[in-house]
Image (cartoon, rainbow, N blue to C red; front, side, top):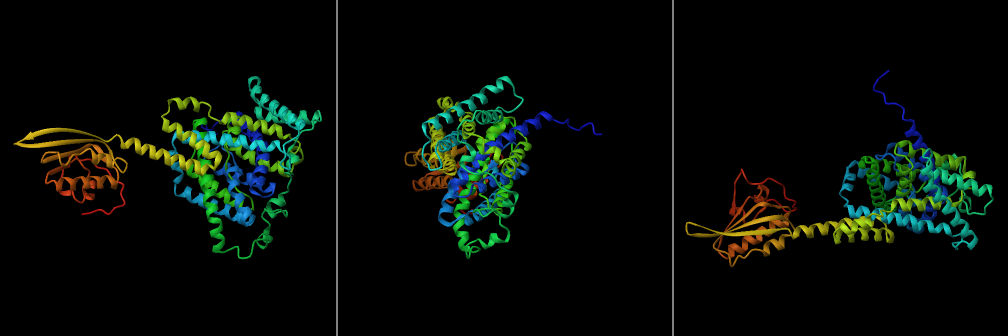
Length: 528
C-alpha cells in the first residue's frame, strides 16, 4: 500500500453532500420560476438545472460553483419564445453552447481577470438586488394578485423563522448546514401544525419521469425521439433559422459566460483558490449543447446558489454533483414531499443569500475610492438591475478603460532645459509618461516650434510610445519644426518606432546600447 495515499476526508465529503442537498432544494423554485419567465413548462427549467449542473460540476473549472437555469438568460429567452416558439429556443441554446466551447478553446476566458474591482463590486451588488426583486413574485398568487393579508402574514412568519434558524443554528452546532436544517424544520412545523401556507406544489407540479426527460412528455420541451423532429416547424434546418437564433445565441453566450466567470472569480476570492476559466467555458458549452439537445433551456452559474453551497461548506465537486442528482431524485421520486415545502422557507433562504451576497463593505470602500471608481461601481449595479449583466459589465469595463486612458493622458510631462555648445543654442526636452491616443494632443501642445531655438532635442528615455497615434504625433511635430527650418533630434526611440516614423526617421539619433526595445500597437503599415 502506498504511504503517499491521502486519508479519506469524511468531513469534507459530508459537508459537500449536505450542502448539495440544500442547494437542490433551493433550486426547485428558482428553476420553476425561470422556466415561467422564459415561457416554457416548469420541467424544462428543472431538467436544465439537472443537466447543466451535473456536467459543469463534473467537468467544470471551479469546484463548488453551482450552475443551472438562470434568470439572466431566461429574460432573453422569453423574447425568442414569444416571437418564434420554443423550438428555436432549444436550437439557440445549442448554438450558445458551441460558442462557449469556442471561447474556451480560444482561451478567451482568461480575459475575465481584466475586469476591474469596481465592476466586480457592482456585479455582485447588482445580482444581489436581482435575487431580492425576484423573490417578490412569490408574494403573489397564480393570477398575479398579491396574497391576502392572512396569507401574507403566514408567509412573513415563515420567512422570519427560516432566517432566524439559519442565523442562530451555527452558534449551537455546525454538524449540518443551517440552511438545510431551516428548510426541514420549518416544513415539518407547517405540516405538523397544519398551517395554511403557500407551498411549492401550489406554484407548479415538479413531478416527472425519466421517460419524460429522455423522450418528452407532450409538454413544450423534452427530447421526444424521432417525433421531436416531426414537431419542428417546416424548413427549420435552414439558414433562415440560423439568422433568427444567431443574435439571441450571441447575447446568451455573453451573459452566460460573463456571469459564470465572474461568479467563479467571486468563489475564488472566498475560498482563496483559483478556478480554471477556460475549462469552465468548455464545460458550460458542453452542458448547454446537451441541454439544448434534450429540449431544455440551458443555463449558467448562479451566484445565489453558489453562495449557499460555499457558505454551507460545499467547496468540492461532490457538492455540485449532489445538488444535480438530488434535484433529479426530487423530480423523479420525492416530488410529492418537496411540493409540501412552504415557499416562505425558500424565500427566507434566498433573503439570507441576498444579505450574504451584497457587499455591504463597498459603501465604506467608496470613501477610499476615486470618484470615477465609485461611479463605475454604482453604474454597473444600476445597469445590472435595469438591463442585464452583459450590458452592465461591458459598460463598466468601457468606462473603466476610458477613465484609465484619461488619467494616463494627463501624466505625460515635459522637462525642458537650454544648453549651448560651440556657439549653438539647443533646447533639450525630456518626455515623461506614456504617449498614446489619449495623450498625443497634450504632448504636441507642450512644444513651441516657433519660439524654440534653431536646434531642439527630444529625449524619450523616460517615455514609451504605445500606439500609432503616438507615432503620428511625433511625425506631426517633426513637420512643424521642419517648416520653421529648425534642426530636430529624437533620442531613445525603440527600433520599431524608428521604422514606423515617416517624416522624422532621418532625425532619430540611434544608440544601440541605450535605445529601448518594445512593440507599438498599430494597424498602419510599416515603412522601410
